[in-house]
Length: 150
Image (cartoon, rainbow, N blue to C red; front, top):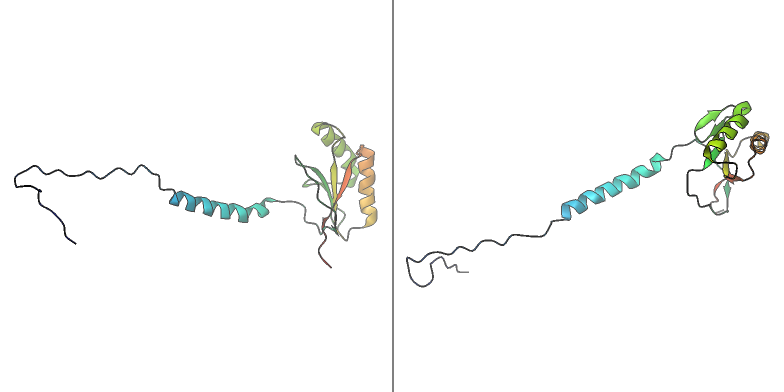
């Protein structure tokens, strides 16, 4: 390993220094590292963002439905409390609230989802279904969880 420091062909000549070439590439490694960290953070926090009424839903083998916009959901808790999306509504105010909401959202052609706890009284669910019928809903879907193996 030798190194030539001299001026080449004689002394007293002018020395020519080579400039280092400018690097024209962007180093993307730090950006990729940051993006992977953000991806992991969002993957962990996404399930925590689904806030709703805590229920123990029954299980079935039916397939799920595809939805474009946020659905109108009616939940019945084990204690008999009824929630429209995440807002608690007394049973006697259910029909006026539902008619007001459907008029604001564009009519009764919309599907409404009914979520009921596994151990809720059958009569309570049927009272809610009767109120839905009285409010004019014709497209009612019952929400369940996917059935686990035996």
